[in-house]
Length: 236
Image 1: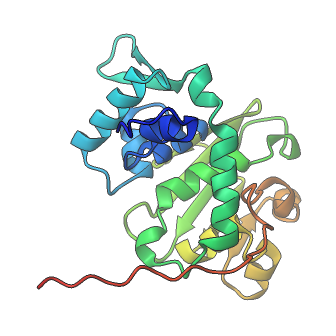
Image 2: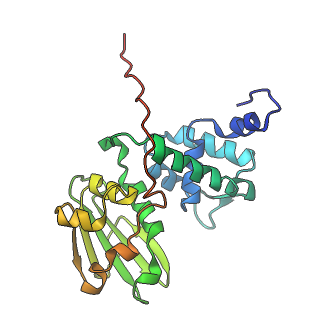
């Protein structure tokens, strides 16, 4: 989009104001790199629009595209210019926590995005120096019901299939509770006391879960107010 102005705000907005562009940048900052991963994180985006936005961001010099060796498709990563958008994404998230936090709908609770977020926030330094498997079970959905996070040598790997080794920790809850835990609206200890979260497995890990299963970096940001929801539109 070209606003036809020399103002640097308009120049930046011209690159980033297209729908989904900022969320693609967000997902790249969170570690997504492949087409399917973007689709999981943004289930409402069509493949056609996602392809178009990725191409536009590549053409703009914000995203780099590399062919996957020996396989179909590409891997995407942020260029230095794209990575410099991280403070802007962080400020948007902070503003969203302060002003744009409304009641969460079921549709907004994306299990894949939530699990990616938890995977990136695990403090591996607080876990044993050996392979550790965490198993998550969501009791309020059949799509994306079970997940595993495998930690090896400080690296994490998110799986939607059983990777094989026996999990060290089992975590069972529902999407709303886990989303509220991630956003800092409720603590793990509170959720367990209210029987909204069940944790079992190795006692050394279940006792210390709050130290290694960390909430969002935005958790703890207090609301300053709320914005009215847009009015519902009705077909004539």
